[in-house]
Length: 131
Image: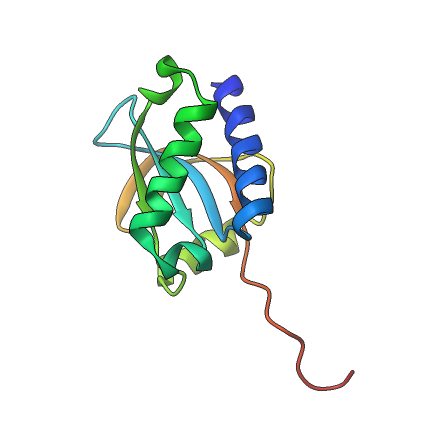
């Protein structure tokens, strides 16, 4: 699993360098889907065109992961940046281009047996007020 996480860290970093930052890039192992991981993604650039973003991310994964690594992924879930559950994840973990684990939690109304967060960060907003 460590090799897959390391590859996904590189994929996340490369895509964010090219397309823009991720607010969430994480693998979730749902309690009801043993051995199949969901790739959870939130990014403002994704929301501009979800179908194209999904195609781009899928192609990038296919190019950078081996077939036996790809079969561990059940689906790619695109999350809107204004989803309230995203804030709960950001409060729990703040990380960028790394790896943090969470076990036995509940996010997005799903019971999560295990999660690997590669990036979980709030959107940067411009400073307002005193300069």
